[in-house]
Amino acid sequence: MKIISKIKIHIFFYLVALLAVLTGLFKDFIVLTSLIVIHEFGHLLGALFYHWKIEKIMILPFGGLTIFNEAINRPMKEEFIILILGPIFQIIYATILNNEMVNHYHYAILLFNLLPIYPLDGSKFCNLLCNQLLPYKLSHLLTISLSFIVIIISSFYRLNLLYLGILFFLLVNVIKELKIHQYLFNRFLLERYLYHFNFKRNKIVKGYRYHKMFRDYKHLFYDGENYHSERETLRKRFDNKVKL
Image (cartoon, rainbow, N blue to C red; front, side, top):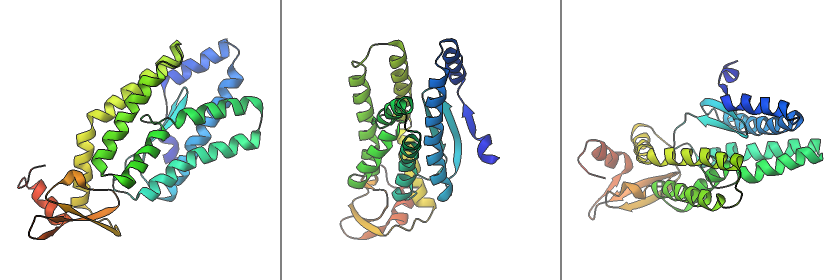
């Protein structure tokens, strides 16, 4: 019952449902919605397995969005598995039904959802890949930048009201992500200061360059003479003794 209470249906979902009835496309709408629900169910099962806190599950007219209230520093392996289970469940569902209409909407949703645009799964895959190679802060900025680029390119693909409306919705979300970039970075650092994360990999950072910190690594900071632990260094940062 707790999970059901977290499911929120966007108001435009009802409008699209009404239009589907009036235009004789209700069967298409049901197939599309079932694919979306199964996709989000995959994310949900992964989240429950790893005990992630679920804030809400949004059912939109042409997609879904599962929002978590979790630490940024949760292991990337967990995030990847939760992320990949959505497409996997959708693929299994479409394979079982295996008819022309289901396959049509299945491939459309799957390919669209893999675009590297916030908040689509493709952007999260991209962000996880960047975090394997680059610091957290830079990875987040690169993913946001790529989102803007793909939206601009996509806007030339098809000029109809529905398609442009979806792109506008995505653009609004990318702008929101950019606005909270610094907040997320500060939260990333604060989590490292307040909580103990058992990371097995280590990195050395020269100076107090917090923007060089990676996910899934613990850090030693070298000031030219001595090495300092991550917690010790972040204590200085949050005590305002060292600037960003």
